[in-house]
Image (tube, rainbow, N blue to C red):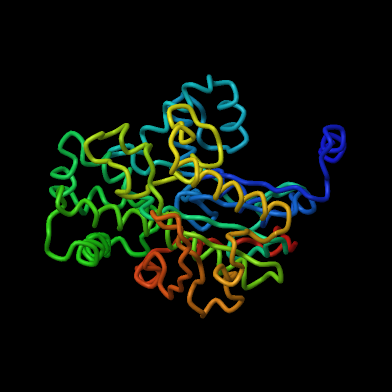
Length: 377
């Protein structure tokens, strides 16, 4: 069906690129490791997300599902009965129930998502992402310079900084979405305090430390999960993996939607802003000024050359080296700057991965999949 449709519209079924931003990027990564997606595409582009980001995988599925079922008057003792009953409930009611899993400021923002499928003949996700082998195709991954800034600004509205200061140990596990993955409940307060000490020292959360808050959210929510994904894919593939950090901020930003006074051209780049220079998005007419239009041409060229050749063109192939095949090596990437230049960089601890990996959290590691349901690509 897919091949026939591509041919009918003049497409090449042997040259298919899939791409996504944020949750779409994690979806692309899942396709990259799912046995059900084999042979369907030839390149992959991930913007601001990956399957290794904490929000792209669901913990405590049974407990959450039973809670929703109980709220909507469904039985909770049998999974088949739960599914049958929930299918009879209005979709709007199911969606509205999600707010019950967001105790503070709509956090965590993605309480539900993919999880391992242990039954059935076709399993999209037969094991945790780290244990699945990605398809050997070229991959392009990009992360914003300060992905978490838009969340930090949202938190600061309506006395949010004071609320977080006064309830740090209680709210942080929800804000950073590790409430269900604390390995030892006796460590709950210590984990929260260790994170605070690492990012804030002895300073309170305030307008003056907003950048610290943004950095904490950026690292936890996007940075280390994306760099980890890049190195995981590169270590298992012969095909190249290219990584870039987008640091250009133009005339338009979603930050201004929350707090117009907090944004000005050239200040910083938050979640998903690179997409403005690829797709036409209502409210963000980047083509209306010379500098933004120039960046639009640059990003479109990077994408188009990668889609055509598997190698993104920035005018100097020596600057943008692929991610090393050795995961012990520093992460190799380019920084796209405010001056619209390209800087080759290496970072051995991108997204403060070492700090986050040392915390006593059990994300991904506490799942035991029976051997009979595991599937190799």
